Every structure is written in structure tokens, then in C-alpha cells.
Length: 216
Length: 251
Image 1 (cartoon, rainbow over the protein chains, first blue to last red):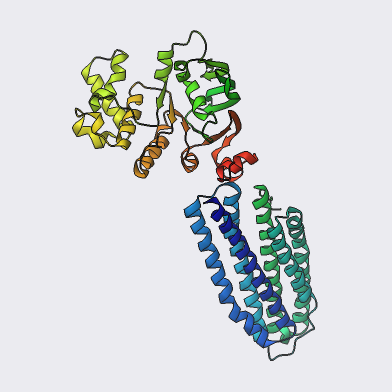
Image 2 (cartoon, rainbow over the protein chains, first blue to last red; image 1 turned 90 degrees about the vertical axis):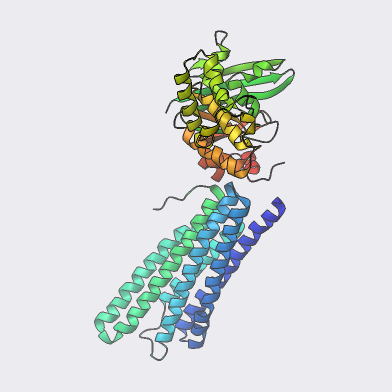
């Protein structure tokens, strides 16, 4: 009985990693679509969101069934509890990728007010945080998880920079307000994605140690 | 809250075999302590030291202290009959006396000298109510206790303890012979009883320990491996052996 239980727990972990992979790809495609004004790619991201949402539901169901049937304890319980939380974080990140792709569609037929530099940089950082947090989850690597938590500050700083820069564009030329606002939203979505990656890293620390990382 | 029971460096030997190895822990007043561990780990032996049930077994030798309200129960001056009145015990299989429900409950108070019928009636009702059995048996108090279901018999045994006004209730796998509904009733009862009494519960059922106890002690081969908040023991045990046991990866 315990062998199949352990297999189920491992499957749960694999499913979370698979969902993480999908979300990561979705974020990458969304940002690419925006930078290259590629509407087709954006529509692919938008269409793919349902699959991510469905994965969240499946993972939640899997967790519920494990709780009901196995009465998990200790680390097993933490695998399932953190599974429920991580899947929510991933789903939200997927939503933000979806939101960014929507911006691409909205801006599809207008020239960009400026070449995008900081937003792709933010995107790379946020994405690295996600892949690192997933790797930390896969390897139960606390040191890597801690690095992810630290990286969040850099993304926050970069977001402030993006915000200020776009604000100056808007002050100089009110015709940019529409697009600049959309781009500020994108910055905000990326900043949120980084926050969710941080959450995942914190859950990894809890999963491994049973201790909460104190929020600063 | 103060410690009702305090066990200090308790060792127990059955002849040459050491069943408990310098076990130390305390049970707070009005709390439920669950003792868990695999068969033969010493948890029941430990439970039985608290009201000296091990005295009945030959070749038992004890070292260390078992303090009840700060007094060692193994002190030569201890009145064992009084001790067992203060510290009652419920066993794995319900063991009602082959007499009426009423007489089962009145037995203890009568032994302790209560003769007045009105007083006895009061004790019977109060004890059965306290054991959540009154409503089910109030119309058949004169019938034999042997006709009750297993779960009702077990609650009758708890009522029989309550009749002599104890302070501590020791329960040795009280639900292991009961069906799930009766088990649930006993667990509910334990939650109520802890308001008035201090309870030490031995259980093989880890979910039961997790549901009903405030603190849990994990025994292995006569050693107390870990003792602490039930919440902590079942979510983040400190010792790998505890983790292996409660997650079912033992051995």
C-alpha cells in the first residue's frame, strides 16, 4: 500500500513540474510576442491558458484524493499542502502570461513608443526565478530556493525603473498614454510573476525543513 | 497549566528484559496525551505504571519516578486502592460486570461506602450522562449490561470510572474493538472529558492520536523518541524515526 502511495506522491510532484514547464513556456511566448509584436504567438498563449487552468484543477483533485485516502503525515503532508499552494501560484502566473499576450493583441497594429529593453530584462529575471524555483522544487534544494527569494528585490527595483521611465514618456507626450499604460501593466504582471516564483521558493523551504521563511 | 503527571527517568524491567528505558515526560492537567508506537514499544507498559497496574505482574522492577500531583505513586506509603480510584483505566475490550447497567455504575461508589439510594441514583445518572450514554440507556437501567453493543459497553466502562470521581483517565486502545461510529463517539467523549479530567491514551491508530490529543509521545523499543505538541509531531516531527513511523515507512 505504501509503495503505491509513494508513487502517487512522486506523480504529484511530476505533474506540478509539468505544469511549471507549461507556465514557463507561456510566459516566454507572451513576452516574445510583445517584443516582436507577434500576434499569432500571442493568440497561442491565450488559447493555451485553458490547459493550464485544467492542470490546476487536476492537481488539486489529486491532492484531495491523497488526503482522503492516505491521511498523509509529516513530510508527505507537506508535499501535498505545498502542492496545493504551488499549483495556485503557477495558475496565477499563467494568468499573467495570458494578460501580457492580451496586451500584445491590443498593441498589434501600432508602432511601439520605444524599443523594449527593461521589460524583456524583467521577463528574463522573472522567468529565471520561476525555473530556479521549479528546479529547487525538483531537487529539494534550499540554497537555490533562498537565491530565488533574494532575486525578487531586483525585479521589484526594475519594475520601479520601468514605471518611472514610462511615466516620463506619458508626461512628454500624452498620445503615448494608452500604450505606456499597457506597458506599465506588463511590468506589473512580470513583477507579480516574480512574487509567485518567490512564493514557490518559500514553499520549497517549508516542504524541506518544516519551517516558514519569515516574510521581510 | 500545571503538570498532573510527571514521569522522570522511568525504567521498567520484566525479569531481565528492559521494557522502558529512562523515559521522561509530563502530562498537563486537563489535557490529552497520546502514546503511540509499534507493538512492543513500551507504550502500554508505560501507561500501566501510572496507576500501578504492573504491580499485578510478577518479576517487574521499576526505577525512576511516576509523580501524580508531585507525589511519587511508587512511594511505599501509597494506598494503591485510592490511587486506582484517582487514576482509572479503560481497556481495549470493554469489560462490563455481568450485572445490570445500574449496578455496574453503582459498584464503585458502593465499594467506597455510598449506600443512600438517592445519592446512588444521582451518581448513576451523572456518570452515564458524562459518558454520553444516559439517553441511550435511561429506560433500561435494570437490564444486563451484557446486552449493550460494544461501543455502549465501552462508554459504560468509562461511566463506571467517572462514578468514583477520578482525576486521571488511562485509556489503553479504547476503540480498537469498536466500529467506526462507536469510535467516533468515544473520540467525541474524550474531547469533552478533558475539560474535567486528565487523559492518557494509548492508540495504534495514528489518525486517532492526531484527532484527539493535544500532545503526542512516540515510543520505540522502550525509548521515548519524541514528545511534543500533536500539531508539531504530525506536521514536522524532529526525529527521523518518528517521521518514518507516522508516515508508514517504518522498518
